[in-house]
Amino acid sequence: MAFESLTDKLQDAFKGLRSKGTLTEDDVKAALKEVKMALLEADVNFKVVKQFVSSVQERAVGEEVLNGLNPAQMVVKIVNEEMTKLMGSETTELMLQDSKYITVIMMCGLQGAGKTTTAAKLAGKLKGKRKPLLVACDIYRPAAIDQLEVNAKKQEVDFFSMGTDVSSVKIAKSAMDYAKEHGHNVVILDTAGRLQIDEAMMKELRDIKDAVTVHHTLLVVDAMTGQEAVNVAEQFNEKVGINGIILSKMDGDSRGGAALSTKAVTGKPILFVGMGEKLSDLEQFYPDRMASRILGMGDVLSLIDKAVEANAERDAEKDREMVSKMKKGKIDFEMYLESMKQMRNMGGLASIMGMLPGMGKISDDQLPDEKQLARIEAIVLSMTPEERRNPKLMSPQRKFRIAKGSGNDIADVNRFIKQFEQMQKMMKQMPGLMGGKRGFGKFG
Ligand code: GDP
Image 1: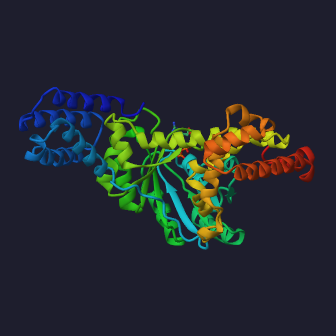
Image 2 (image 1 turned 180 degrees about the vertical axis):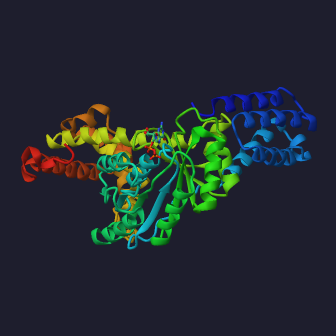
Image 3 (image 1 turned 180 degrees about the horizontal axis):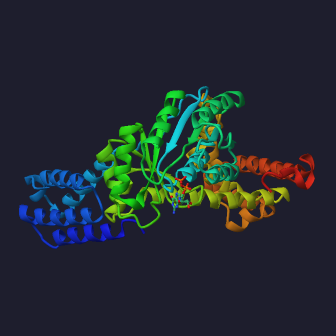
């Protein structure tokens, strides 16, 4: 796991503080000395460490902190905030031009950094919003061209190559013409890497930039190489000019040096992090979440993101189950309740409608009445679980009890049950209406 050793050492430093009731300036200084050692061992740039520790110290030895209710916690909070600042404070999004225009992204980096893989990962990420074209500009390694083509296929995005006999500048220009003709609005150029930085590589990148309008020059650096990654970033920035950095291989046992120093040294933000070899393993970089993770405070927000994803999967499973029942005309009140709950989880009817394409401008009075929906929900909730699963049980006595329990008139209950029965009948006819068993092909 990345940062393990750094996290352990930082936690040790804070444990010392927590064990003391009140703190003196010397206590804080001693703890920060440990923090400094931990950061240096994690391969964080020396100047960055010095600056970082002095900023924390300045804030942490103030009277407010030392005389506060929980000084140790305040120190940790300051370290967390300064660390977030170090990595850029704000999350930097990759800005795309209006979809009418082509956004050009040039990927660069040393050989083996993960450039080709990341280009394909990025294309996959953008596929939902734009029509990307992956362009092979590495004319020195035929294997890199093949690798990009294979990955483009996997990601189901278009690929452009002119082999190895044409200059990368010519390829980039031709790719722009191809993109215009075929309606691509993002062009991702995968350029050649070398084992070390050399002038020829830098010139080639500059030549591409002179020939086509590049909106983003993104540098891919291997997080496992620590300060070396930072040196590489500095040089690329100086010689070619970069807009942002992608840290690859953050799933490995990176010590943290690259993540913590790159922004501070180069002034360029980290946009994404590579979290594995799979083409889906590219994540947005959040400085605050990364700081919490490094400090061993967990990354609650990312966990929530994951929980939301998991929940979406669970719902998909439930949806399938529901559709399969619907296909057989077997709907019950339980399913009715479940679909209302799902709707509410997504922010309610109005908010779901607002998210649908073309529905944004719908006015409130055009929406079904939420109060009415709540009344219906109350009716279903007043049924016993058995009644919900078996609508046939509905006798006049039961309807009367349900009306009373839900605060409705018996006429309301009757109306709802009648509507429900009509829906049930319609569902039963549905497979026939929609082409028999295959009618629900997409879902079933
Ligand atoms: P390039 O020479 O810069 O184009 O590098 P490649 O894209 O060919 O990647 C070099 C190696 O690193 C390949 O084996 C990739 O699968 C691997 N790689 C790339 N990104 C990641 C990552 O985020 N995590 C891990 N574990 N491996 C990665």
